[in-house]
Image (cartoon, rainbow over all chains, first blue to last red):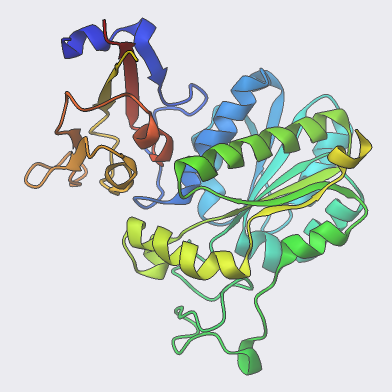
Length: 258
Length: 76
């Protein structure tokens, strides 16, 4: 069979989601952000919510998310995305409202906003990209940096006596009454990406059904910050991040009620 | 069982040469260029084993920049 015969529109099985526009993304080669952007675009298109979705972008690498996905966006002050999203959702209850935050934004400067928005049970979804480092500013130690992990501001590795323990904020969120769905996913393999997509769909459905707040953590790589190639970063993440940040659903109230 | 034949098209100007598609492909259909670079200066992914591709879409799913389009047809 000729290759041109296969490349016909009726045989198309995968292409870049239409919501993701043609602008070149500023992310480093191999960055997990791109995959999550694709998943968000696909899920919104599957739900047919293209015209009714409002994203809130953070401060961090994903600050320019509004340049790439063609939905409505708001840009929040550093860490304040959940507060802004709460306001938007209360004013526009029929809109799908989500925040897209990194670990520095969500687990450090925005801890208070995050915990209180989740605890109030706002009908929003928080997408939390955890790569254990401040990627945008050049690879400094974040609250989620693993013990022994070397960064620009802990060049001898993170120590408990000096820097404390890595923060498992997703576990904290699972303890709160206001959350209905708390999960930790990853996007390093095809299987993991499909699971993460299902988790995002579930979280967005929960938001629209008014079941409470959902938190989807995506354990990600920052190959530039970790100073590795993208493939090595994936292997390092599997070996070092997953034992501490275990994948899976931490809380799912939607299953029990059915 | 009918065999599936696939074809991948890489948007080479969008590609950043991260190599994740090459690792994800179970049949080693894709590879990075060794000499040619795109306008941004990256070695880009391209199809090296055209006949082997089954159109499983693994490469396209893992591509962070959405550079890969996949077609699939049943072989008669």
